[in-house]
Length: 162
Image (cartoon, rainbow, N blue to C red):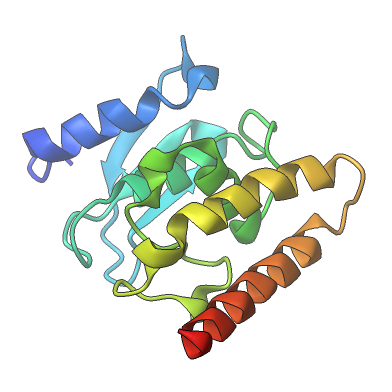
């Protein structure tokens, strides 16, 4: 990663890490992901993330946040439920910083680069709410998907009326 690391990428990583107080005192290794179809990857057991600066628009805060969130899942620190959709939910809920790119797994068919920014704040708010719902309802992912669909439906009706 040393050859690929730019001041801009390093700055993004350092800024993203500020949103993860769980890593204070931890050593996290940042590497290069050579898989052409992946923006990033994580090995929680080794506290290692890999980023791919050659993908799409470079390394986004969302990608960095998503991979760091994987380190919070088992077999890492184990404070976030395991799974890719869960990783998207906890990443989006963590900070507005991570709204610069659409989620990779959470309702991915609903957005693209062009329309994500119009929905990002609302989806983030629903992710925060879903984490609260999870405290009493383990089917919170289904709740969230329905809430997002309802939000999209309301937006579509509003657009038709306008």
